Length: 323
Ligand code: SD4
Image 1 (cartoon, helix red, strand yellow):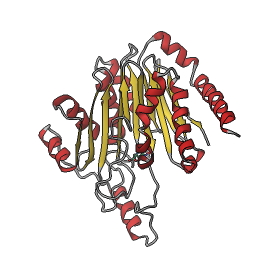
Image 2 (spheres, helix red, strand yellow):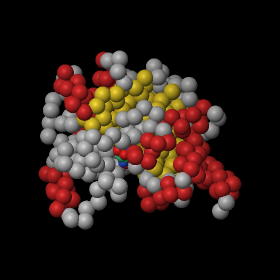
Image 3 (tube, rainbow, N blue to C red):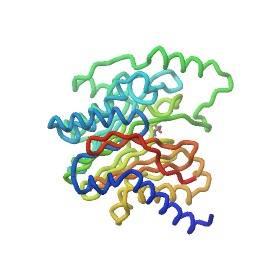
Image 4 (cartoon, rainbow, N blue to C red):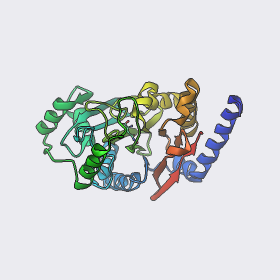
């Protein structure tokens, strides 16, 4: 398929997926209710919690933060928060960010250790400081000063996995070889034009200590602008950071693309700029300020399942795949 054909193919597939995700979209745009869109299976309970918090009268920022707390607190989700797989030295280092589309401001933490809920620390950075991103020891000390309790984040299961990995003489490391994942990214709208983007992860398992992925970087793992919409990403942060995925998607939307087309266009750009990226692990989600949604994956080897909450219905759907 030449690239022009591929582009129209993507448009068609993306269009079909947008339809599949619902008359739903059209209805929500009309009904104007809240919408929550998250990455992976663990996004479903996260969306459900976000919707519950929002319905109780809390803000959209509160809803997204509390929603993301669900996989952070779940020891069985081994890529986020408590129970997340550690770095190569056996230390769990967490990255998270939350961005408010109204104030056009974010709070973020990178390489945070011993604190279970990095998205909540990121929220404190947003609300209580003039800073945007805090990292490492400073982020940890900031968390203690704002009331968080230090905790052991390794669970018996994540410790066991790390010991098994350490024991393998032929183990994969990030000294120029890689792979393994699964972050929570969540975007949402209140149904009245306000959007928020949040993201939380333990990053790549066995990463080199101090490595910062895309998730806590504004414009990469999160971006939100009430004038347009919001986006988030999951996958190989070392690749995605170089494409500023979330802001790029929102900019495509600002130029008139639907969230679905904007997600596909970003992936196409990543693939076109280097054909090797077609094999990369890159998945993205987006929402417009009207509540239309989009989700796409670079390839079928790492295909995003995304969770959508709209009109009281909570669904798990397969994203469009480019390659
Ligand atoms: C990272 N993007 O640290 C994160 C990992 C991830 O699905 O999203 N995995 O690179």
